[in-house]
Length: 209
Image (cartoon, rainbow, N blue to C red; front, side):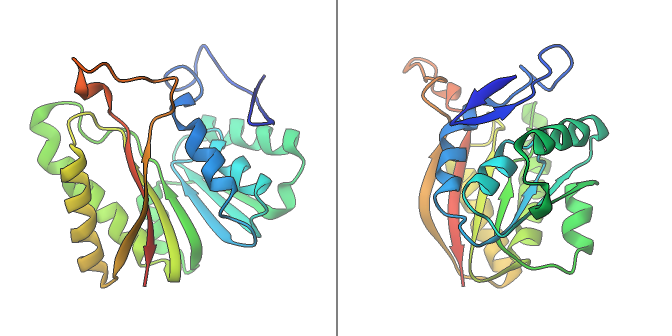
């Protein structure tokens, strides 16, 4: 068990994804806590619930969490039980694209933190299409004034590519979107000036009309 920003999490160091917990999102989870009071939140690609528990701690009215991995959802539910506020949470073992396509719910805030879509340069074009489709689906589920916290951890996707893809998603969804703030990896993942590719995590907090 670890503690992050006062919240306890069970972590599977041996069989979990990467190191078992995505420490690079620590600061962004803390930001989320400050903007979710009373909001209905969707956390896609939720893994073990880092953003989910941050939203509950911040006073979200409800949080829906989605991940295609049964092991991830099992760990998430264990963390929810440890936290003790499962009455405001629903977890679903389902593909996040599919969930966004089928759900009839609207949300005040949606978190998109998918795995890397482009691990090789030849994957870049399809990855950008994937990010565009994912963000378009999410934008359609947000009410006026809703917010989208969206990320790419694909090193090969540049910050400019990601912004342009989000602009295309906004146009496709028929929504005007504004950048509230840029989101980056936590300070425990420093970037060497000789290796700018080390700034792999790029994100934006958007507001939509």
